[in-house]
Every structure is written in C-alpha cells, then in structure tokens.
Image (cartoon, rainbow, N blue to C red; front, side, top):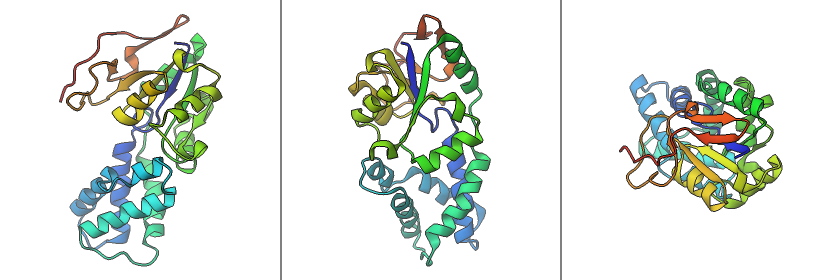
Length: 246
C-alpha cells in the first residue's frame, strides 16, 4: 500500500482521556456545588454519549453545536439537574481550553509519519469530528503540516462509516482505495466503513481490548510501531489476524 489515511481521535491523539478531564472541568463550571467525584463521573457519561447524539451528528442529522448541547442536556436530565440559560456556552467556554491542555499526541505518531515521508507514502487524516474542533487539535500537537489532507465530517456533511467519505478522502489524497490503508480505533466507523469503501483497514486498539466477535478478520495492532514502512510500501509486521481479547 502506497497511501494511508488515519483517524484522529484515539489514533493520533489521546482524545478520550482529554474529554474526560475537559468535561469534568466544564461540568464544574456549571455545577460548582457538586464534588469532584461527581464531575468526573458525569464527565465520563458526557464522553460515552448514551443518547447516541454523536452518531446522529456524523449521519448529518445534527449540527455540531446541537449535538454537544443535547449531550449536555442528557447529562443534566440523568442527574435531575436544571440547565440555566446559556449553559451550553458556559460548558464550551470551560471545555475547550481544558481539552487542549489535556490532549496529547501518542509517542509513536511522529516516527510513523517520518517513516512514511521518507518512503514516499502519502498520508492524510479522516475524522468524524468537525473542522472547527479538529484544526486546533492538530495545531496544538504539531500535525497540521504532516498531513497532506484532513477530511472532517464537515467536508461532505456526513461522516464515517459512509463509504463515500473514505472514497472522497482517497480522491483528495490522490490515491486509489485499493492501494490505501485506513488506520482507526472504532470497529463500525473505521474498520467496517473503510472495508466497504475498498480500503485496507488496520484496527488500532491501543488498550488491546476488543468486543467479542470483532477483529477476527483484520490486522489488529496496539501501536503504530507494529507497522513496517519501507520504499516498498506499508505493511503489518504480524499479518496474522489477531483474536479478540475481551
């Protein structure tokens, strides 16, 4: 494979832990009378999004701001709390700086990008987040100049797993789907989506945990260090299909 597309959140950047910390800080700004353990618990609930609002956003049913407000409203309803006027704005004002403060780039990212550049492999990113949310993350982690293209949910108005976004990203990167790898952490959005578009999916599970029945027929890695990048292209060091671990 002579080209690779990567997911951003929890693939290039540790987004989940940053969201836990940022949501806790933002909820503390809204309900300072609550203790820190509640802020942490409710922040985890916000990240997990039990109402499925992020999925509606990626499908093009909601704007980014609507999706975030609905997630906040779900948290408030779950705990029987009232949302004051302007609560969504207060939440976002506290969330954004805390998120950027806590998010970091994984240590294996720059060596992988360096190897791709040296080997002439084209690299881009495809994420379900918005352009407005993605750009500051890439800037803060010195990745804007390392990716030839960055395709977000805003690019077409919908996101993964729709195969059209994968094909559009390949077109923008100047490569054919059949010669392109896609590396991501989510089974449905990343692996099934990439495969349905004709790309070669590689499942990156940094914690090594997968759901039963998932991952039996695709390469499963826990680090980008498990990929071989040479002048001959991109390959997985262990081509055996990894069995689910949990």
